[in-house]
Length: 279
Image (tube, rainbow, N blue to C red; front, side, top):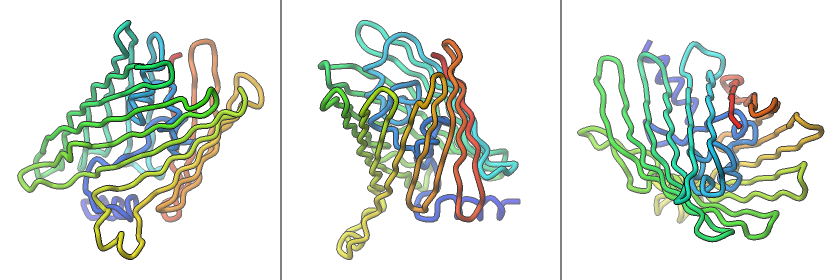
């Protein structure tokens, strides 16, 4: 069974040089928008994509998400995100599990976001990480993430999120984990349309040799959300490295939102995402 797992991860992350805790999409709404959520970050998924977005949220928010990759028995991703605002800022808690019985990644994150100015907010996340492989034991480390979000105009937002800023490593072998720099843009021309774009740079994969020959390890993500009629939202997205398309729907009922997304893969077929969020 282990060789099936190895093959799956090679196909899932064909450009990756890392073995654990890749920056994967969480939540049906961001996934449907191609993962271009760094500058959007306006719901409970801000904990994962840019904790600075929490600084502009009020009250209590929660989300439960799940996805089964490529319709297989494994691996799967499960995520719970909770946040609560206070006079001094917003606290968030994220619990995430990826994998299955043979290979399992577990992350427990504590995030803080605060609005410093009317148009600027900062965010930070500290994540405890555990990797467990059947027959080989487990290893633990921690990751530190940092970001900011600025409203350049009432319709245009710019965000930056650095994933694994501390360059955390796993186990006695000091296995390298991904370090990702994300710059995002969000534009809302009117109340019914939202456009977003993210650029992801894999810092650890950015060697001098690659830069010298112009091989920049940059991934592009594009997203769109439109509300043709309330309470239904239609979402579309695109990712590169490799090229993947996504689409999804959101349905609001009172204080609850039910979201669904489907993402294609050029080799392995589609992945289904489902989320339930409040409010």
